[in-house]
Amino acid sequence: MQTKLTELLGIKYPIIQAPMFLVSNVAMVTEAMKAGIAGCIPALNYRTLDELRAAIRELKANKVEGGSFGFNLIVNKSNIKYKGQLEVICEEGCDFIITSLGSPEETIKQAHKVGIKVFCDVVDLKFAKKVEGLGADAAIAVNNEAGGHRGNLSPEELTGLLNKELSIPVISAGGVGKRDDIDKMLSYGAAGVSVGSPFIASTEANVTDEYKQACVDYGAEDIVMTERISGTPCTVINTPYVQKIGTKQTAIERILNKNRKLKKWVKMIRFSIGMKATEKAAKKATYKTVWVAGPSIEHTTAILPVKDIVAKLIG
Image (tube, rainbow, N blue to C red):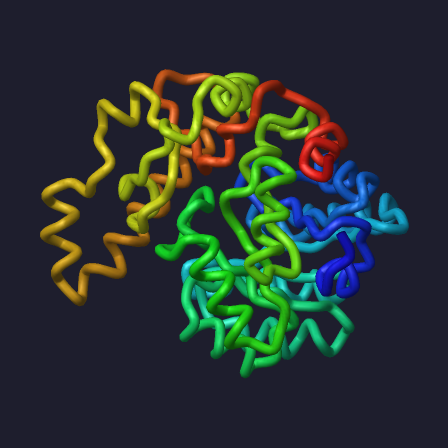
């Protein structure tokens, strides 16, 4: 399974343990590195820059040959911590950064100065061409089978298109829950895969047992799109609470979103409310459960250590 991604990151297998808000942590990434893959954590999982700095230092101490680690940065204006996070990551060092939701130009510029590679989330060819022009080291093709905020194109269509049009490696994100899925993505031209949802049900994840068990009990047909978390369509498990509140914006939100001046503020408020609800569901058992996940939980049959989940993926 040697590919351009294994070359770029010095890993055994072309797999990135995807960054997941509230889920990813040092323990998960450490075990991912030991298993021969890369692991990534959202910088927003840390409330302070000191906590982020401590996590980087711990991961550097835990790093083993054949594994690598990185951090995910939200690079648009909604992330007021962005500049500080980028500065700390570049000061302390890591193997790669994954950028999401905005222009990666400054991240690429600063990261490359200190030898950190930058991979950029993209959902279409237009943005993929932009990040390639800015010097990105790889494009992460977020397809319509990804968990959380996903793209509109199928894995085959998006990965095949980007592989044909770009000169940088393409990493497929979404729709991977078993070895056959990895082989399929590689056959489309992917240099590797980004896998998130199967790792939610890991013993190392510090979310509730209820969240983990939901990933075991529910399947692909139970994943629905909701506009009620961040204002942008996001995939969640269709729990009774999600069914109760619905998946569409409220009438008031729809009206306000049509106002150009108010739209930005409505989205920011919805994002804040949604993130707090998601955090409560992830960290505390409650009837108000909003659990983010993708259809690849179809292949999650038990709560397992990260090393066993990786073994299933490469086996």
